Every structure is written in C-alpha cells, then in structure tokens.
Length: 314
Image (cartoon, rainbow, N blue to C red; front, side):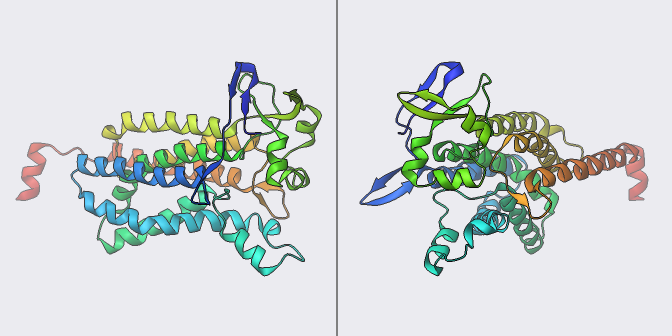
C-alpha cells in the first residue's frame, strides 16, 4: 500500500512509492533527492560566489571535496547513536556490513554531515588561503537548499515522523507499508511506532493507519523560511561569518522544536536524551553569544572618515 493521507486536510496522495527500478536495480528516491540537492546547492553557491566577487571554480572544488566526507559524516553520526540496531548478537558479518553501508533506505543524520562539512571547510580554507568565515557564509544558502530537499527523501521513505497527532497537518501512513518492508515489528520494538500511535489507529480502505506529525514537512518549511530571511539579510551582514551563524542559530531553534515531536530520535546512551535536540540547543546558545559579541565589536569599532584615512596614510 503506497498511499499517504493528510486526513484533516482532505488530501489523499495515491501510489507514492519510495523508489523505482532500472534494469532490475532498485533506485531509492531518497538517494536521488540527495544527489539533486547537491547539484542545486552548488548552483546556488556558485551564484553567491559570483555575486561576492569570488571564483566559482573554487567552490566547485570545495563541493568535490565535500560530497564524500559529508555523506560519511552523516552516516557515521547516525550509526554511532544507533549502535545497538546495527551490531546485534547473532547477526552475521555480511548482514551487518550491508546494513552499515546501505544508505539508500535512509539513515543519514544532518548534524553529522554539517560537522564533517565544517571540518572539510576549515581544511579547504587553510589550503586555499581563504577566510573560513567567508567560505561559510557563501555556502550557507546551498546548505539550506540541500536540507530542504533532503527532508522530502524522508517523506518518500515514510520516516523521520513525529508521535501521534490529530492536528490539522496530521499525516496518515498505512501499517501495511511497513509490513511489506519487513520493518513493522522492529519499529514497534524500538518505539518509533509508539503506544500512542497504536491506541489511535485509524481505518481507511479496510486497513490500519498510524496518524503522526509530519516533522519532515515542519522542518522543510522552517528551513525555507530561514532561507528567505538569509536571502533578504545577507547583503546587510555586519561581519564575515554572520550568515553561517544565523543559519546555525535559526536551524537550531527549529530543530529543538521539531526533534521534541519525533519518535525516532537518536538518543545519547545512558542518559535518555535526544542528541540532536541537545546539540541544537548548544548551537543556539553558542551562536547567540558569538553574534552579540561580534555585533558589539562592530558598533564599538571606530568609523573611518576621509580625514582619518588621510592621517593613516601619512
């Protein structure tokens, strides 16, 4: 069953598959969307580089540097905080290895990709003798484009959703979809399909459906709003690095809220805390301090006048 419903909006999306087959090889929309996200991100970054008088070729090189580490970072982050689901007693080496490298079905964490991306950017900037802050500002809009698109990969995979809701934007997914994928039992055992969802099953077309928060949609729309704000503000930035800090602050604010709704969050072992929610809160706090400090420094900086510039040259 491949339908998805938004029952309180009266929307029924028919036959929404999670991939397609070419010459017997299954291709997931998740991977296609990520690839398209990289392409569109580069086009946006290239245009921003040109606007700010930088070399577009430099950012093509940066994207080539970035692609593999970003995917590896996103995957490693996910594996670290989902360790028990990959390394199970009695599970064969071959099956474990396949599950570790199988990203077509999902399992990428954006914060892991961002962390890897920052490390690559620092190394790249040093290698090319660039200011990291300038590079970070230039790529921010592309990063947001990639995230906005990437969340729709979660939509096709029917993942990254929140707990039960009957709100206006509630999304309904048939449990038969997970039965067909052989994942229903695991999702129930891991708590992704919660008791609250199970207690509020809806019946459509003679089948049971869970009704959940479409958190992929919430985050995608939040990021779109953040992107619009940055597009409007970027020409008025007060210091290099401010745009990237605004992104971290704004994305962190949204992620604290959205992560609180999700039922599949990666957890910090032993303390039962959502790792991405904690990291997002830290980003908001740290970026708030840095932005205020930098702005105060900008205000206090002496204003250059023609007379003072003439004295400086004497």
